[in-house]
Amino acid sequence: MWRLPRALCVHAAKTSKLPGPWSRPAAFMSTLLINQPQYAWLKELGLREENEGVYNGSWGGRGEVITTYCPANNEPIARVRQASVADYEETVKKAKEAWKIWADIPAPKRGEIVRQIGDALREKIQVLGINSLLVERVGGVFLIYTCCILFLFSGPGHALIEQWNPVGLVGIITAFNFPVAVYGWNNAIAMICGNVCLWKGAPTTSLISVAVTKIIAKVLEDNKLPGAICSLTCGGADIGTAMAKDERVNLLSFTGSTQVGKQVALMVQERFGKQWSCLFECLSKRKGYSY
Image 1: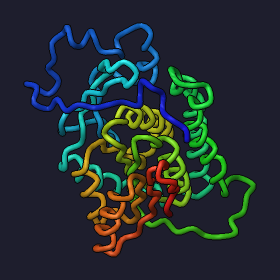
Image 2: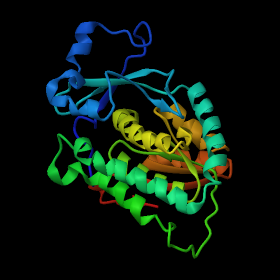
Image 3: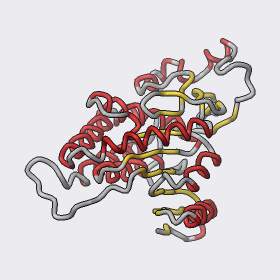
């Protein structure tokens, strides 16, 4: 299984009780790994000391603040402001509006945008993979790029054998240990088919969620498309529960533990929603994947 770079695959601690939205002693800010020369590559990904964890065409976030720590040395990397329920509501509304525009774009043009997203991620593949093992460092991002190419079943000079009708808004909940590729293959095929996406990664991997979304957002902005086509709401169980229960989320993809997956499945079934799940069992119990 591909893993994240060690400096992006992190532990997290809540710091929402700090006075003010971003107030923090200057001494603490200078000790963040992101400010140290050997971690300068984090800023190449658009990350800062304080990061907003909501994207719906613009960046924001009014939820609690999570400080992320490097598991290799237990040092703080940076902080991410999570989404509040109000942020979630606003983001869903903007995503549904963006869907009206995206679904009307011809499939070949959608395919071209997805190709550009794949290329943009490939350009950052080495930066995203710094500080990890060689075999692991490019895996997750390369899988996204591969998915972007494989799902280009429509484009100039190609004919559609089938007609795929978009369902609308696709929610994507990813786990801490495999977030990039899982998001990538869900996002790529959803976009190709004319859907928009809302991503909620694990709170412990908020930095990688922000970094990847920044890359995708630039492609959308360069093509004068609504950023809410690929929305992001970093958050915890409250945001995940809202997505599972929300009838406006037309299809929900969940990756995580079997225990939580069962809870999510029940919430989606109660509203007669559509769900795709990849539930991880503990490999030490000699169990694999459940689809």
